[in-house]
Image (cartoon, rainbow, N blue to C red):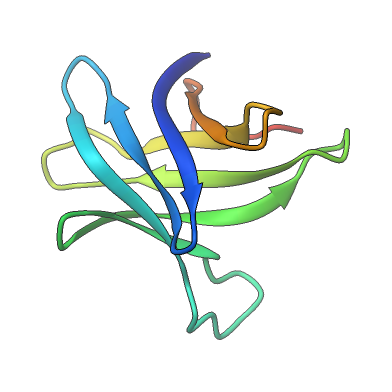
Length: 107
């Protein structure tokens, strides 16, 4: 697992940056989705500027820890990036953790 981003919580969701060897973006925003029409709809949309680059779903681990399961995708990526956004237990900062595999999962 690798830390690929850091975020802070705002009134509009989360804001932060994502850095990998091939992708670097500042001012990444995870904005709550207000038009979720079904139970499988994402809880957040992920933006860099005006471009939507992903979505996130609110989850709870088996240990009872809340997190966001994030899927990032862009035509410039070889494949989607799956990661989880966890709070750093200080209530102010959040870490985006990448895990190799088809889908990241905290359970």
